[in-house]
Image (tube, rainbow, N blue to C red; front, side):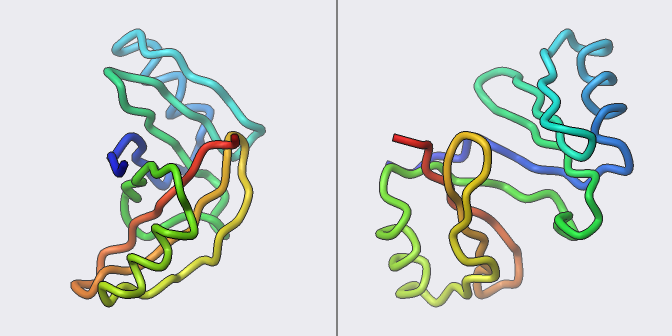
Length: 112
């Protein structure tokens, strides 16, 4: 199973981004420290990353899978380049990759 269920955006203030979406649209925000906030909306989670060292250059679409290792093998076999090896984060593990056209995306797997 592969489905897009998360989009991460660079932000100068994750807290301010979360508050904005709560106030403007009523979407609940969950802060994960000073540099990261999730906003849940219509079956999709929006993440706001304020740590410049962790920010992607553009919005980062994230694909959910049940098998991270198999997804990483499939990305490599299809010509993608892994830009961040698998790492843990609150809720699971993920890796980042660049597809042949240059866009960076991520694949994640929830904790079992």
